[in-house]
Length: 525
View (cartoon, rainbow, N blue to C red):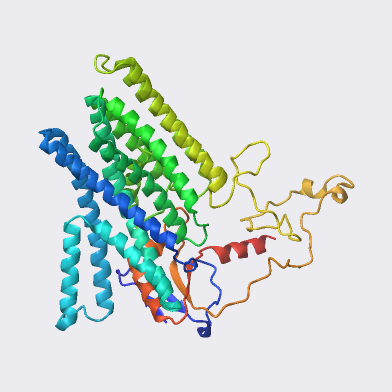
């Protein structure tokens, strides 16, 4: 049974192969999520909903407070940083809903003519979703839907449970992307704005502190939540524990707080230069990201827009966007961030108004910036050294917690086995081939024939009678989402095939180049 996504002629082919059809019974690519929904997952989503509500409600309350007190300038800026990002996110959320709902009704055969109760129900759904997004409650609806789908995946039968788990993971991916975009378009500017107002007014009002705290927690929470959902969606990565997520929240909480306070101090004295600094930093970081050749989106223009959004994130905190070891890039970023924080704070300390702020208060603010950044780096080391999903980072004896600890080798397994065949082998020259007398006997042979014995732990697993959904696309590398999470055509097709199959299928992406690489290796040897 084969199905092709209906998003145009260039859509990727999706093929469902059953074992009795002669397809492979063990997929080497992606597999459906093997983790079950737990009550702690629901509590995490509920806390994320509370953070989202507190962030938006505190900003609106503070804007109304500015309006009542006649501070129209602060009221306008506060309301602008609430409404404009929210409108962008709601439009994107509504666009996703329109595509998903239209595709589902088209597949059910009711897309040509609506009549009777079914057409009335569809009209009610359209009106309800339009009202929800008009009231800027699209994220709240998606959080509630994620909770519903997760609970259904616990209560339903086995096959239905897997279907609801798929839908819950798709909804979690959507809300994570939307909230991450909203956090850095709304919460980050709002945090800097309110801190600047506090510095200029030389006082902290309760509503200002509440709004700034909610924005800061929202930023830190969404970074950690995004990374957790991304890891949970990929079976090739270990899931992040909730202890690791909490420590990562503290890591980003303190580093973003130091960054935002340094921004607010500098902006309270040098408004024009602060704008120039932000634009320059964003351009440099965006160019750095583009130069890294990320592969997150399905088209070139979407990738450019994504890189520009990540450039905004890089104004405030670190965000990994490239496969491979990230410690060197992270060290470079935090060295740049530390230098910028120090330069901005020192410039403010040299030129601040000493008639309004005493030297003692200025020193306290400088100490707050430095200590907050140091605490953030401390929690970062705690996360990577103790709570990283891949395990502690102790491998070399004299280096400390820089390199990851390798798992102990399986007893009886060859330690120098070739895990990936080389592209080519160097050929020897005549002089190298002759060598000195007796030299050949003293050399270690290049090729050795070992008995083909497999340890018990490395024995091949028995094949299971499970269908395979083949996706004619190469799998994206972590930290990118899999294609079936960001391409809604693939998502729709996979859900339909998974629902129609009596057995939960596995996913298998295309692996281009593997047969050619193996053939070249064998020919060279």
